[in-house]
Image 1 (tube, rainbow, N blue to C red):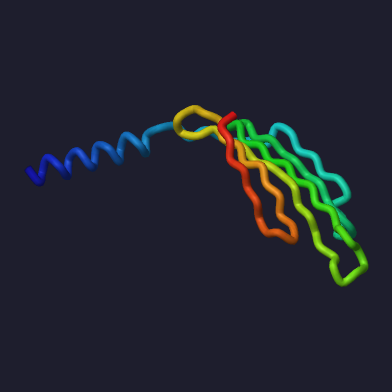
Image 2 (cartoon, rainbow, N blue to C red):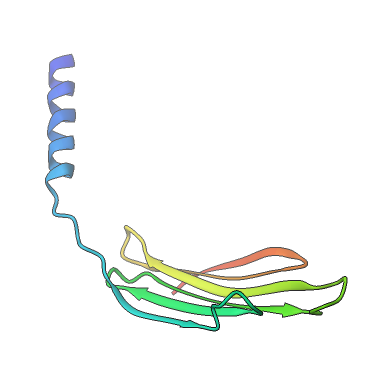
Length: 102
């Protein structure tokens, strides 16, 4: 019985390792004002369906209450074939994500 389990495990590992790996490339990319002063903005999309975009801006710049507010989202295709998306804001109230099924 133990030999059968070991053989099945070895076969399962071999089948997973034998699956061709998909090469992932960036199909679209944008960057704006990413020079280290003020806010920034970027986005990219990959050939496997992953996407990300993010924008940041300083609020109350030059005061004691200066904060950076970041707003963005990312999405990916899960193993179930469905696209999952996370929209988020990060500011003085912390990180606030909202997950949805696209």
